[in-house]
Image (cartoon, rainbow, N blue to C red; front, side):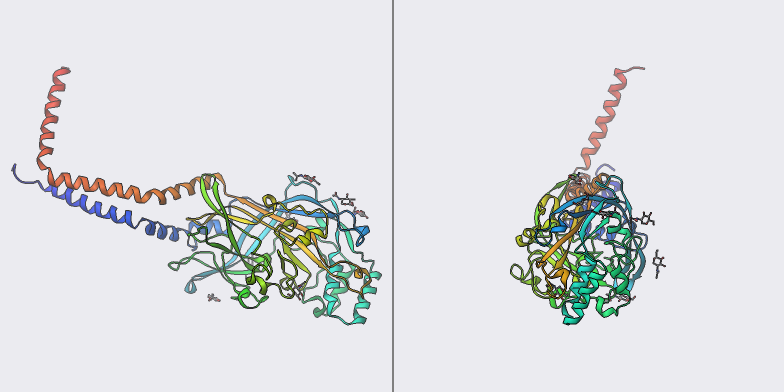
Length: 489
Ligand SMILES: *[C@@H]1O[C@H](CO)[C@@H](O)[C@H](O)[C@H]1NC(C)=O
Ligand SMILES: *[C@@H]1O[C@H](CO)[C@@H](O)[C@H](O)[C@H]1NC(C)=O
Ligand SMILES: *[C@@H]1O[C@H](CO)[C@@H](O)[C@H](O)[C@H]1NC(C)=O
Ligand SMILES: *[C@@H]1O[C@H](CO)[C@@H](O)[C@H](O)[C@H]1NC(C)=O
Ligand SMILES: *[C@@H]1O[C@H](CO)[C@@H](O)[C@H](O)[C@H]1NC(C)=O
Ligand SMILES: *[C@@H]1O[C@H](CO)[C@@H](O)[C@H](O)[C@H]1NC(C)=O
Ligand SMILES: *[C@@H]1O[C@H](CO)[C@@H](O)[C@H](O)[C@H]1NC(C)=O
């Protein structure tokens, strides 16, 4: 019996060797294994964990609006408009994806965004604030008339005077935002053929977010990837309003791509750009790497709208096809085509990164990258956004029109009306969870390598030193005897 290796040793040795090989394999292929597990966890499918948070984000969201009060409207255009920022008017936002339809054969899912807003009393100001701003209804009417003949323009000029239209209006914050206000020009527009209103549906009230509350039409009909197809990311836009391109622009600019906001690439580095489809802008924006840092114990790369993301051809020729006409000023985006031909231009708040000429035409613009930039700070290996600041300013384009008395002497300019901000910071518990996932990624290979070493040692011990174990057994028995002698019970 003594000379033979017992069977159990062979089993231990064989098992140890197999486990060692498996652990070594896992150590070497760790990143690939991790990525494929993560990809399967993140993929959107009915009932998956990422699906639940995608349908209705559990994080509290806030939508904040800053309105500019025009304090010297009566002296326009002799004096530059003086704009005093009011707000934030803060709204708690509830957001849900609805009308979800799965398209398994092309790996996509389509939905609409349903959003509702509730005024938050922590706002700096109330909805009863009386605010003076540009008369946007008149400005749009004049803008739309720019290609009309002389007599039609004169007719509009008389109409504006008859209906008592001024260059500015004074309204309450709630009317300017969600509630809307009535206006005689809107009544008139209802009786005009749609061609004169740029195809805009007739409305009975005007407010910046009028009829947006609980509406399914805020962001349109979106179709995104589910990430179930190997090697694809979830949440990347494939169609918008049933189209696979943007109807407003030509060439490269018509391309529809990028993240719809929830899922980002999982291999972001300093040279990458972050592509985001932004429905408000009706386009995809490529954000540039800005800096790296740490938030809630997690590393991030920050990508932001830079001077070139929005700029005209003089800085970035890629953007020329977005101008839709003369590339007027740098750092602004002509969104007229996707707003029924209204003279709307979007920029960063306070014309941050914009042409200095824009700031010069008004007083009160104080751009500050801390407060006014647009960025996504993303954990680069997991592709999870940790800190997001989405900010836009809406501006109305004005230009002189010699045939319309009200607009005879206005300068050619962009008139800032309001800006909005949405800040989302990852919450503590999610951050802790992510930090754990990240350390599994970072240490998994090391742990597997350690395990491989341990199993290999066990296997080696079991095969190479069969007798040592026996001696140890004898020694242990001797020890027990000694103990008994020391402690006679
Ligand atoms: C806005 O400006 C007007 C004119 O200067 C002023 O009367 C009004 O009180 C201001 N509104 C707020 C809410 O400060
Ligand atoms: C609140 O609004 C006033 C102007 O109406 C402004 O002076 C003040 O800085 C604002 N406070 C905050 C915390 O934003
Ligand atoms: C879309 O969702 C809304 C809200 O959940 C619902 O009222 C509506 O009937 C849905 N429409 C379709 C076509 O499913
Ligand atoms: C995916 O399939 C649906 C039909 O189930 C179709 O309507 C949709 O256009 C397809 N999307 C793409 C990108 O092919
Ligand atoms: C939006 O609609 C909800 C009801 O669904 C209402 O309680 C809320 O006050 C509305 N928000 C605004 C800003 O009007
Ligand atoms: C707002 O203020 C203007 C004057 O600045 C005034 O004519 C108007 O009646 C006020 N609106 C309300 C609803 O108080
Ligand atoms: C903005 O775009 C519209 C159409 O997309 C175009 O007609 C208009 O001329 C552009 N405005 C300016 C100021 O370039």
